[in-house]
Length: 358
Figure 1 (cartoon, rainbow, N blue to C red):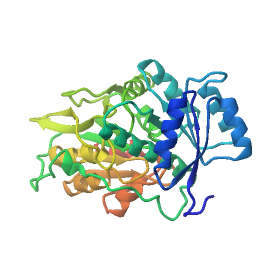
Figure 2 (cartoon, rainbow, N blue to C red; figure 1 turned 45 degrees about the horizontal axis):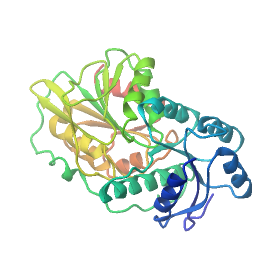
Figure 3 (cartoon, one colour; figure 1 turned 60 degrees about the horizontal axis):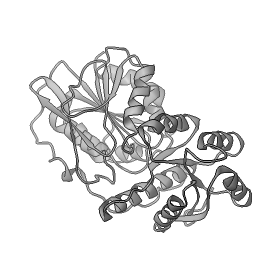
């Protein structure tokens, strides 16, 4: 286990020389990360690992000589190292990237694209955060998390809820936030729900073009239906809506109807979509009709919003440390006094149904 003052050592594996150089520059800009090498294919990466074992590997999926999935599978069998999948995440490749998560990749990032200075800066923050989250997943017993850069709050997207209590209705809505390790946690949670479960709205930190394939895969294995949310989608019993990558999602209400609003906006708590944005909207528009769940993930996105939910009368649950890949987001919510119950992952679904009087 590394000491607190040591940098995370990263190996970048990608067949594109341009991407390797860009990734090296982006990662090296973070004072807590050191790029110890780059490799153009898995065979070259294996040679470098024999000389020096990195703390984290960033890995492309489509490469010559050996594809990234095969290499990932070999790594996890022979010498487990936290792996961050670095993919362009096209529609064609999304299923492959999801398979990588099943094989043990702990995080997904999107390759930098040519664009504005703002976009490149946002990419840098997300990439460095993803790599640090992967490193922290390996070293999650440290005394404290790696420090983070200043970030915007949900004020940038939605006003705080007012003091008026939301009128009670017979319909409950469940809002969930997750990050590192959340793809597997959400699968475990959703798979056990009955087909007429309360309506569910989810923010999982994911890049653009990834959430549609993720939702489709869950839809194929769960009794509830799962879809990537579209603007104005109604929150219905037996359906889970997942925020599209790179867009914020808010829960809204018109009469007895709950629906979602999909919108652009700045990074909030250094993420888009942001759990804080979803949770604040739930506090404002659902209040005591909501149940909030915060799952595995690095950082504190969702902690403030969950406290606002609790103050508005909602019931709240956090995933426990033992079942988390990274006990960051739930820990922050607990620290703020925002959580009613802390539960292992396999106990959350039943508690949610109980809180919804199911």
